Structures are given as structure tokens and as C-alpha cells.
Image 1 (cartoon, rainbow, N blue to C red):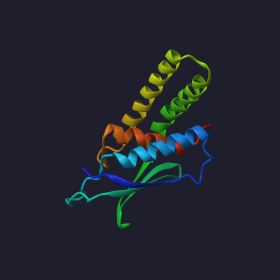
Image 2: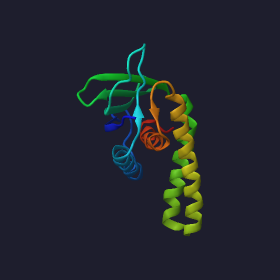
Image 3: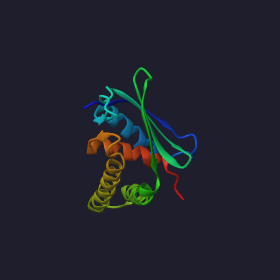
Image 4: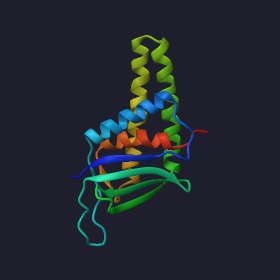
Length: 159
């Protein structure tokens, strides 16, 4: 399976991230580049495009956009996904992250661990949703989906 070697986030249309979320984003990008599994299937009888890939994530016209190119800037694919399936899990993820950040400052380790387990569960749910939404468009493992979900969270406006 191929991989992503560079990721670009177009966050020009959203409010600045909190320091905690900015740190989560930096870690997700670093981890994603270090270890990921991402492939695009062939279309209309053509062979699958060869990676490695450059991925740009953004929100355009209210839709989540995955713009995939080769490292030589050859367009491979562009996927537009509805934000609807992500809204609730992203909202839940932000709420549990805030609880976690607050807990780290004032609660004992056992309570922090319980909140962190809940946070990981919601994160896994978001990753599975992403894998389902990309089915037939791209193939990615759960760790890649988790890291991409973290980046998607940075793009979806919180109300």
C-alpha cells in the first residue's frame, strides 16, 4: 500500500485553534507522516495511482475536501464528503478533549485515565466514520484514519 508523504491543511476559513488543539494537530501531522497507509484505487479500468501522495484537507462550500496529488503535483483524486456524518462525533470529541485538558490540571491520575479512555473511544468512532465515508475512494488503516480524524476536527467549525 502507498502512503502520504506531505499533508497540507487549508484552515483559512476557520477561527484559530486553541493551543491544545494546535498541539494535537502538530502531533497528528508528525505521526501521520512518520507512519501511514493510504491508497487510491484505480478508476474505470485504470491501474491504481502510484504513491507516495500529497494530501490537502480543507472545507469548501460546506464540504470536507480531500485533494490528493503525487509528489510531482499530478492530480490523483479529489473527494468531497458531507460534514453531516462527522458533526456529532466531532462535537463529542471536542467536549471530551476539553474535559481531559481540564482534568489534567486538577484531577488524580485514575480519573484522568478514565476520561482519556473515553476520549480514545470517541476518537476511534470518528476514525471508523472516516473509513466508511472513504470506502471505494481511498483505503487507509485505522491509525491513519485516527490521525486524519484529528486533522478534520481542526477544520470543522464548532458552534
